[in-house]
Amino acid sequence: MPTLFSVEGPFTVPTYEGKAARTITPDNVATFWRTHTGFRRERGCYVFGIRGRGLTPGYIGKATKSFKQEVFAPQKLANYLRFLADVRKDTPVIFLIVAPRKRGRANEAHIGDLETFLIQAGVNANDELLNVKGTKKAEWGIAGVLRSSRGNPKKSAKDFKRLMKLAK
Image (cartoon, rainbow, N blue to C red; front, top):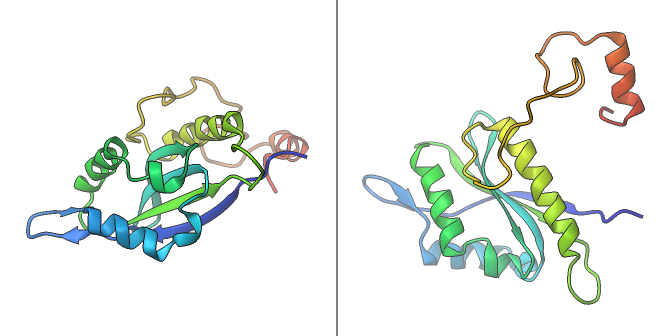
């Protein structure tokens, strides 16, 4: 049986609205964790993003210790604030992709694999994703299946997607 992560969110990230810009203060972080106490000790991956006319990822990270220890750590918060600086009106959100609870440590290899996958998916959704590691876009695709132009795929491509469980 594969390790099944659960997706939680999107949760609104509280911000301080200043006269010239907005930021995330230590009080905002404390408010977030008071509101979402059930996730403080969990592990997994997280996706900072923006909700406007849709959802856009900005930064993807992993938490192998706990979400509370790692999500708003200074370097990660700096990346997210940089992302926020480029969007004025949209709402900052975060998704938590939670590892299943097991005795002992979380499966760090699975969390790492998930982070790699999410970064690749994130860079396809947002060319300006702020992650540094793992953001090189693949230079290949499969017509009508993966990383190809829009338009109507051929029947063979649709059948292949079903075969490989790439579509519902």
